[in-house]
Length: 264
Ligand SMILES: NC(=O)C1=CN([C@@H]2O[C@H](COP(=O)(O)OP(=O)(O)OC[C@H]3O[C@@H](n4cnc5c(N)ncnc54)[C@H](OP(=O)(O)O)[C@@H]3O)[C@@H](O)[C@H]2O)C=CC1
Ligand SMILES: O=C(O)[C@@H]1CCC=N1
Image 1 (cartoon, helix red, strand yellow):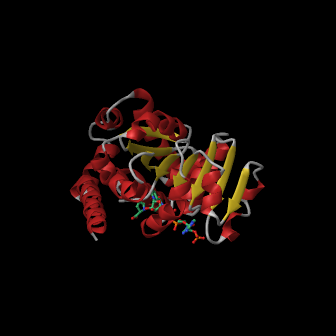
Image 2 (cartoon, rainbow, N blue to C red):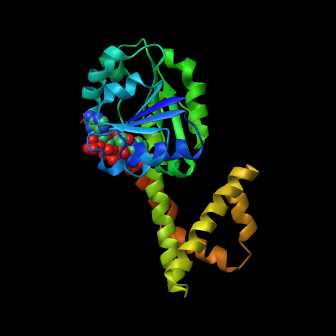
Image 3 (cartoon, rainbow, N blue to C red):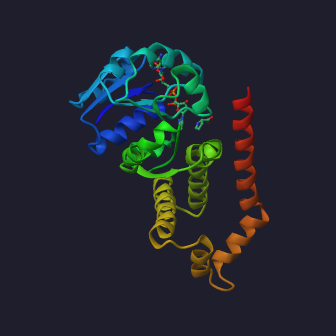
């Protein structure tokens, strides 16, 4: 697969690393206006970097766009006359609808929207995918690309905003939970490095229990909560302090904000 990543910033570079670490491309062109941050990745033989988006498009079949929303229309306008039927256009751009893309380049292209998260750089992204009508023929290809770097799910386009909050912003939410657990562990006597190790591997184990046994969180909680034991005491205190409620409210606030940004 010949892949171009247009906009090799935080997310674009994470995607590039994920693809490279799973040998998911035969060639890769990364674009940016300022190439100075790409020296490290240029060491991979199959990677070239350029400021010229047209060159990247001409050399590639799969085009992954990871620029900021305000930069996207201009870039699509620059490259639309060299798009052909070989190209699959994958946009990771938050809040940028397929209809808006079609307004610039027309509907006769394979257009996919993908919402990955930064865990793509370590092959653990949860990526949601939707497409335009023509793009339905390339959804399996897009899923195959993202499944090499984690897990993917096809969803209706109207759920993309919600998926952004749960999966992309979700990385930040889970990081804060891991950090809070780390702070608790330090207070209980572990040094900072040990505390983080305990917190992150326990988090990983909890998610793996659900993923690998197809279980429900409450089933797993029942197995840990000894009657009159320490787990239920801690858990109930967390709930008295609003743990579940604050998470749900945070998710909804994030969703309200993303809808506000979209309207703006
Ligand atoms: N960060 C995340 O977790 C997620 C982000 N997203 C979405 O992905 C997109 C990118 O986000 P993020 O990576 O955080 O943003 P960044 O600002 O880090 O990356 C955007 C990149 O685009 C480059 N760029 C700007 N203009 C051009 C141009 N004309 N041609 C080529 N490259 C250009 C910029 O580099 P330079 O200035 O050097 O040109 C920059 O490296 C956003 O739309 C965001 O909403 C989606 C899911 C998750
Ligand atoms: O915080 C944001 O608005 C973007 C969208 C998802 C991740 N970062």
